[in-house]
Length: 258
Image 1 (tube, rainbow, N blue to C red):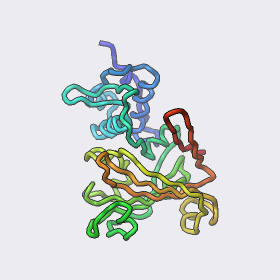
Image 2 (tube, rainbow, N blue to C red):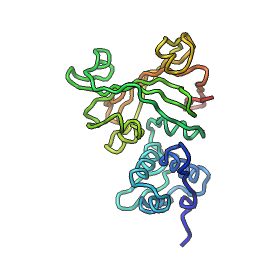
Image 3 (cartoon, helix red, strand yellow):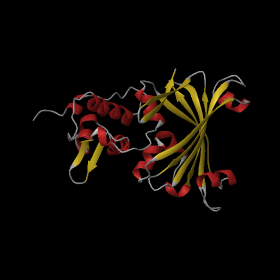
Image 4 (cartoon, helix red, strand yellow):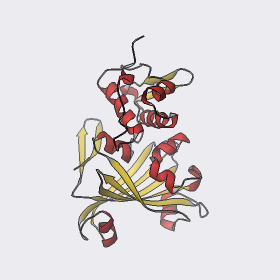
């Protein structure tokens, strides 16, 4: 039997790009190039683990992200298949790690602060939480090729992923961890504002105080409308470009990074 095209590729242990992100790239390229067709069966988890010498958790992170983005569909008892792009589910397709890796750049994060808190009234109202719900609050500097790009503070209800630790957060994409427990982004409300950086933000982003930046807020919901994420970010305006493309019946939004 001829070897599956995906299994002919290799992963680099020397690369700073996470193994699961490399696997995502291999499978996406095979799909978008037409090497594997709509409806084609992907190699099993066991085959991927054996061929690439990676763990099942790494494979599941990759397949979970691809399913979230609508590239594949899993059928219980049958396997994972290439999805029809015309019927891909409309869900939020955002992971910093995946986004930057797909640009051919190396993503990394520096954890600045991690705590479990009773949120402020503003955060409770934004996330529609009661007065007793504790939340994870963590701040990270998001780096591209080793240079700071985004200063990001995120809030998540503690109950959606009990046991989150700073160690887990620094070794995994939190979106991939949430996917493993069934928390999948369905829609998001974003807002952007032009601002200047204060002293603390500028220091963490290696900029001059008063430098131009984009201030970004995001609220993300599951398919049932439950808000499970509220994130605020400062993005360096000298490195981030926001592109919006319009055509009949659709609008596409993308970020470019210098």
